Image 1 (cartoon, rainbow, N blue to C red):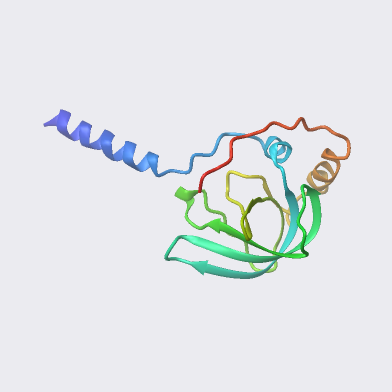
Image 2: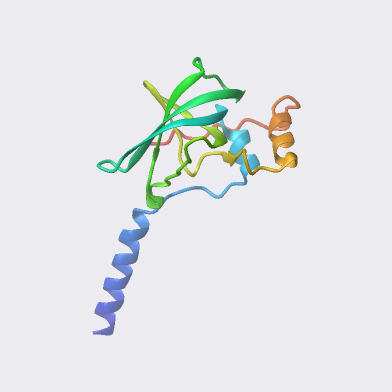
Length: 147
């Protein structure tokens, strides 16, 4: 009986962990340095879609730290739940975030670089603003995420 309970417990744990967020442990600086596109954005509009566990943001691009964003206003989608590496931004908040281009919108999640700019210290803001100009990052190509 104990072995059956142990087996069921292990199966349940394995099933749950397979659904967990699979982020690779990295520092914020490593995430920033690995990123192709990092933007300073302000959240202008939030639309939650509970049917597919996503949230869509309309954001104003205040600054481009790396990569490019052709428009001042862009759409960014992200998962909502923690187990899908979800990330939630408040309306009106300002963040430095890594985004990945997906057809007609950008995508982000909790595994990618993100920093709450409103609460960031001046040290963090200075470090982020100066990392790329001084070439402190070595670009490391990472596999494209499937979402």
